[in-house]
Amino acid sequence: MDKDTVVKKLVEEWQFKADQDLKAAEALATLENPLRSVACFHAQQAVEKYLKAYLTSKQVSSREPIIFASLSRLSSQSILN
Image (cartoon, rainbow, N blue to C red; front, top):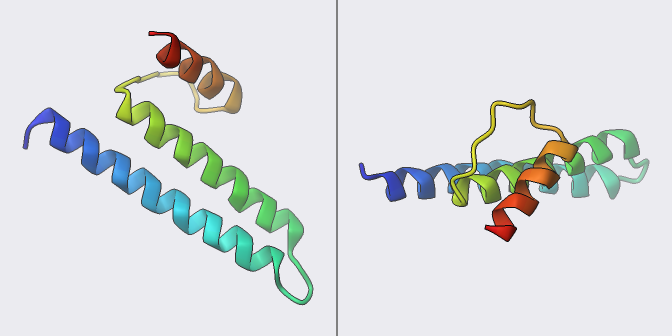
């Protein structure tokens, strides 16, 4: 498998996982008795995974822990390059 194919597959995997977290967040938030804190957790996880998909698509890698500050900085660097 060539590098572009591998990157595309990884991006699709991150997007699928993010989609699943987003669906879970929506389901939990719309229950008769919403589980808001758990819904927020899944929403945050979805955002992080979508950002990982984006960074993967731009072939930006980091050995830093994946936290919003570093994701934001890496995304900005990718956009500027």
